[in-house]
Length: 267
Length: 317
Image 1 (cartoon, rainbow over the protein chains, first blue to last red):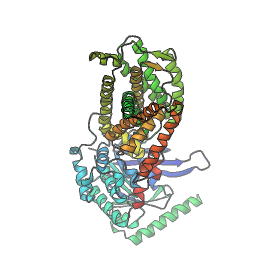
Image 2 (cartoon, chains in turn brown, red):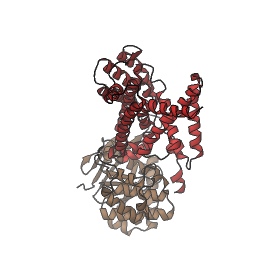
Image 3 (cartoon, chains in turn blue, cyan):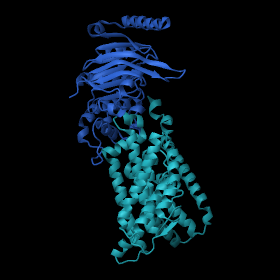
Image 4 (cartoon, rainbow over the protein chains, first blue to last red):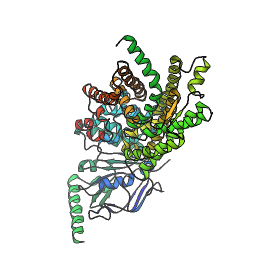
């Protein structure tokens, strides 16, 4: 069984390298997540939050540094191979699910993540989907009875619930959530967050969740990272995070983000 | 036009259409399942026909010729994939290059611009012969090619319903998501081009045997005729599942050839056939536009544009 320990060493990502538009998106990230860590990430636009997740998932290449998950070096491994260990849910529900496949087919497709896909076994097998269907009926309110419907006919919120259930199928070592509720209306966003929280707690899957909402960053998880200018500028965990109030967090956020920007200006 | 004309045209359409329908399934795999354009088919069709002709005129087994035709077509598809993947050419451009190059390859395989198979042992002569009928017996040739289509179409539906087939379909719909779910999307495209062009090559082998000759130009326009048949079939059968898709290809192929056969029987100038084909494409797209509940499916006809225009789920979110 995998444990879910993530280690980043001097991870550096550069966009448009060697051109006048060159931009350092991640500036030497060192980070270790313990198995079961539930980390929220905040930071201003362009701080590198999404790039951090993309670099871990393999959709953007690392210019320097290393990524280890459960001790395995992932830095050079292609995206689809990393997906065996890493599940993710992005902001846009259309990216997370296949609109022209049915709900059942989407679930069956996700159930094979990190496993072989045989040409001699039927893609949709209800028996193997029992756990996914249970999750779907718990959080999807009626979705589990509509397995034959196209995912594209669902609302954005329902589709995001489906995406969460898919991410949890065949439990990954690491779950990456990139503002996965920010495109939803408040009620749906709350429900998806509730599902996320319950699932992460019950499975103890190591989770990194980007949010633009300070309250969410405080409320969820056991550790909070603040990013700015491609670096992690604050790392609040354990009792310190529990004791943190929203006002205190906003103050701390302003202080470290302003400091990191002025650092950069002086350097 | 008499009822006999209509029935005659329909029988013609079924008899001549079935061998082509197998190849249009291959075109459908890339055009619909992968949502991309592959023009290799104009060449790989002839590759299949040429290999079959060479094999049969050498006095060898006509059924084995079909397997080799599939392999030849599939190999052409893999060459297209290689150009697409490693030279980073867009698929449509890579396939044009391979299609052009295949012309010379096909000419070398055939040895002359056309090869006659009359008097040779083909699948038509062996099958009809087994029933004591002549090779020109319409009923038995239709039965033969129906069985072939049933076998190939059935295997294709089963494959697309499998775990591996689901990965292929997901790649065509949303490659980004497919990679996130662990699918090697490049390998999926290679497989689709192998199967697609394999079926087109197989179809070339079937057509050569049913017509009794191979011609180096017999593949010209395959992609257009295939896409026309697919669009026409989808006017009638809209659901996008593997089974309905395969049935739509069959229905569209026969429907398209029925219209052409009817035109022939009522004495329309054959010079106008290409124009008729263009009209059918326009009409099929037009009809499908009128009856749509959502825009997304029509937009699916233009590979690559679909995702950016499909705003259904997003706007409601």
